[in-house]
Amino acid sequence: MNQRGFILPTGIMAYAAVGVAVVIAMLSAGLWAQTKRLEATKSEYAQFVAQAKAAGDAQEVETRKTNEHNAKQKELADHEITTSRAIVADLAKRLRDERSHSSIVPRSTESATLPDAVCYTRSKVADALSSFEEGIAGLLAEGDNYAVNLECAAKWARGIGKD
Image (cartoon, rainbow, N blue to C red; front, side, top):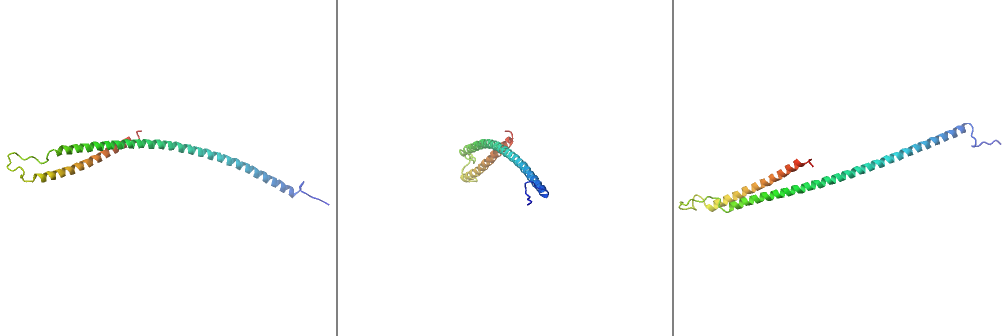
């Protein structure tokens, strides 16, 4: 009996076995190379994540500082506006009080025979002029408040970027 086996292949079987061995070796080398590439990419990714996190943390700290600074500036500006409005209101009140002690209608002359009956009723003219004066004082106070707001906004705008 003539036996043949795979122990020592001959002919075409030998070429097939060598081909399979070469393919297995090439696949093993490719797997090894891809594994090294994957490890390198994982390392780069981990480094990128660490850098991005560090940059994000640094920006968060910077943003927090900027927000705290802006909050302090706003508080100072609000206090300045409140103080300026109080000063304007106090001046307007003092002006109104100064005028309230005397009549806005001029006194009649002492030589007039009927001092209350000059061409007008003194009380009606005084009421009309007082009402007019209150309206004007209200407009002036409102204008002063706008002027205070505008001045504070301009001061704030000039201060941007100086800190």
